[in-house]
Image (cartoon, rainbow, N blue to C red):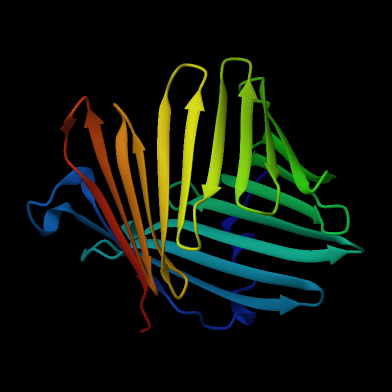
Length: 264
């Protein structure tokens, strides 16, 4: 299957202007100067063609350069429609340096049956399905049991996640594959705090704490011993993420990204 970048952007003539979003991250944990910054501009727009909703977007570097062709990092396009009780969407991501290939994601969801199916594939000189995933919600006692099987055709490996939500304060999630199992128990302590410890069959433990700051804002801290400390702060239009690699009791460097909507 030959993929054409022209087909991806054939809707440009009917699209309406959207608002760009500027993201700035720090490369390799370097705070030594502006050379360590990696600003990225994300722009998207949308339009309708009959019963199909269309979206397109581009991710580009915001660094000054005389080589305009080097600015785009990724292009993407998405089409969404409905068929009866099914909502169907198809999205294509194209690397700006390889316009003859695309990463595809096809999602079909049925709200009446609480069922969703997702297919990930690669398109280019040939078409190959990589992953197939499904999600089905069932009533179980006083709560809801969600089953999410996933199979990777590339790795020839499967995985299943079972999640139980009693609608009160506790959610239990179990993820299992041929090599490992992981259980997570999320407890809503009060209206502002939620604690979610996770334990894997290999003995790895992580604990996440989510603090509500009001007005939809939150601070989430996740500790994974001998791995990393992750912080995510959402404050209005701002989202800040900090990753601190941990080796024993030592913290080696930091990776930081800050993102917000910027109107031009």
